[in-house]
Amino acid sequence: MSDVNKTVQKWHASFRKATDFDSWGQLVEAIDEYQILARQLQKEVQATNSTGFSEEQKKTLGKIATCLEMRGASLQCNNQTKEEFKLEDLKKLETIITNILTFNKEFPFDVQPVPSRKILAPGEEENLELEEEDAAVGHGSADVFSPRAPGTLLPRLPSEPGMTLLTIKIEKIGLKDAGQCIDPYITFTVKDANGVDLNPAQDTPVASRKEDTYIHFNVDVEVQKHVERLPKGAAIFFEFKHYKPKKRFTSTKCFAFMEMDEIKPGPIVIELYKKPTDYKRKKLQLLTKKPLYLHLHQTLHKDS
Image (cartoon, rainbow, N blue to C red; front, side, top):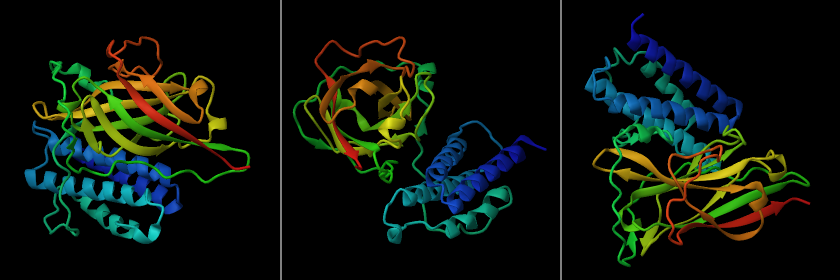
C-alpha cells in the first residue's frame, strides 16, 4: 500500500472516531478529534513539497477541514437549535475522504478552505529561524483587529452539589510591541505537574483591540474541570500567539501561568515568560523587566 493510501486510511479512521464520539454525545472528545483531523488536513493542504495529492484534491481536503471546524464550533454552542452544521451532513463527507484520490464531483457544501496559514504546536516554531523581535511600541491609536474564526472556547460544565467551577476572564496583556502583533489570540490549557493535559486546549477569538502597550481580549474562559478535581501541582497556562506574515505561520510569543494557590475570586495580574512554553515550570525566563503583565479576573461558581 502506498504512503498516500495509508494517509487516507488514517484520516478515515480519525473521521470515524470523531463522528462516533459525536453520535455518542461525548462532545468534548468529539471537538478534540475534529480539531486534530482539521489540522492534519490543513497541514497536507499547505505542504509545498510533492505529497501525492493534486491541487484540486488539496482544495477538497481544505473544504473538509472547514466542515470539521464548523461542526466543532456547532458543538460548542449551548443552544442546539442554532446548530450551524449537523452531524448527518458531516457524515456525507466520509465517502469523499475515503475516495479522495478519485473524487471528481462537486463538493456538497458551499464552503471555502481555511486560509493558508501554518499553525504550529507550542515550541515547534523554535526549530525555525528566529525572527528579530520588533521593539516598536504602539502610539496610542485604538486599532480594532480584523474578524477571524471565533476561537474554540467551550461552555461551562454542568454544576454539581458542593463542587466549584472557575471562569477566568482574560482582560488584556501588556507587550512593548503590542501594536505590531497580527491576529493575536491566547491558547488556554490546564496541565498537571508533568505537563500532561487535564482539559482540552481552548483558543480565544482574536483580540478585540489594541491600545498603547495593551492588547485587549475581554473574553471568559471556562475551566473544564471542577476546582476540587484539579490535582496538586497542576497549573493553568496562557500562551500568547500571533501571526507572522513573512514566514506564514502562527507563533507563540510568550506565556503565563497560574498555580492552584492563586485560584481565588477577583482580579489577578501574572508575569509573562519567554517561549518555548515550559509546562513543567523548571526553566522560566521573564519576557521583560518592564511592568507588563497578563491581566485576569476570576469568578468561582459553587453549587451549594
